[in-house]
Length: 154
Image (cartoon, rainbow, N blue to C red; front, side):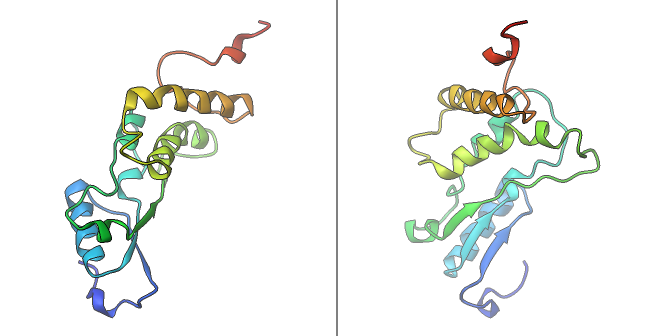
């Protein structure tokens, strides 16, 4: 527990950046019950090495999946993807960040009732990844495969 919520100025936006789902969901419930606005970052910390299609983990987060009223859920005003770590530098920053951040972005900017399927998200995120690569931004593949433009004229 950080501090007494009542002592926090009314216009403050609280940032939840730590914790497993059961921890940040409890905090979301507690903070929004007190009428405070919240920015959620905890589920989108990209600070570990993992392999495979881990973008699924970032896509399937439901920011409003906590115990609270509809009014409380409206107080969750957004989220943030964060990345830091001992194994991140200029050589792997972009490849590690993308497509994970794009998966979180779609989750944050889309109606979760309309876009909750990983299978339906895959083509959109794959297309976005290819746009990044075409623009010179190194982005990891979402799955086995390549962008059509990568091998044209070879």
